[in-house]
Image 1 (cartoon, rainbow, N blue to C red):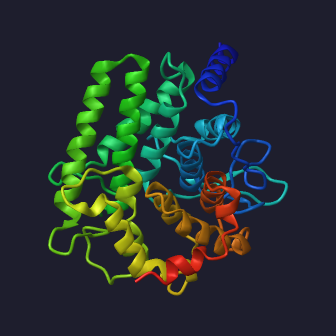
Image 2 (cartoon, rainbow, N blue to C red; image 1 turned 120 degrees about the vertical axis):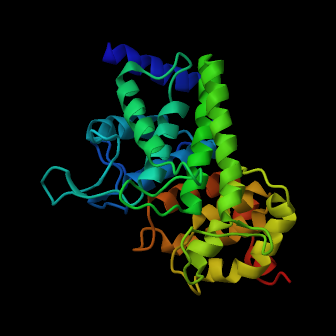
Length: 338
């Protein structure tokens, strides 16, 4: 039965994917057992980063069928009885062990559900995945603050974060599309309604109308590039509908004109932030994406480089034409913008 389900799963993905799609290459990150390490040739597994990396590559139309299948097979039996996932590590020659709790249950649960739904065959969630889906969905539902209508970080941390809730929103939309593909119109409508309700609550709780700026948390904190500035990119990546022009190319240009140097020169934050490059591609700003690519290549496999940055790097690389990738004036076009 298990073999039949996997065959249907792979066959369905093969039919849905272009035969000419460029493959996502997780070499150095994905181990033979299917685990995906946070860092290149690492011994530490942070499921959030691995799952988000696969989803990013998939949304960029890279072929992720093989690494997704192996990752799901590795992580599925490690789901705890409450539906969540921890972080895992090992010493050389030893087995993987749970070594830390998840950083944010709301994000991880939503990403896991999104991965399973978007990679399920048209016949629906495979039998081997159904219990995992049920546990993850029940656990995620328990994190919803009934008064605010947004999600807490975890059962023990009742802070609500903007970026986490955007990820939940994006997952709900993806789940609704998958349910429609399965032929479950009623479930799809219900999930879509949940997503739209969350969209309204996100804007009510986090949006500063006067500043046209999303607050990164329901808690006040000192402003920093991360999370405050990076957070503004998340609605663009998730296609969050807005009443203002915050989702327009002009809004992206304003963000870039103000923060491109901090982002690309790593002046205030050492991390590459490939997610910002993905937003640039979304707005057809190939110059910014090309500049990020050239500035980031020397950073690959460094201490601040992880599997999510690698996924963004390969996605940008696949999108840009050779002339754009080698454009020597790309960075001057971006950093000298008014």
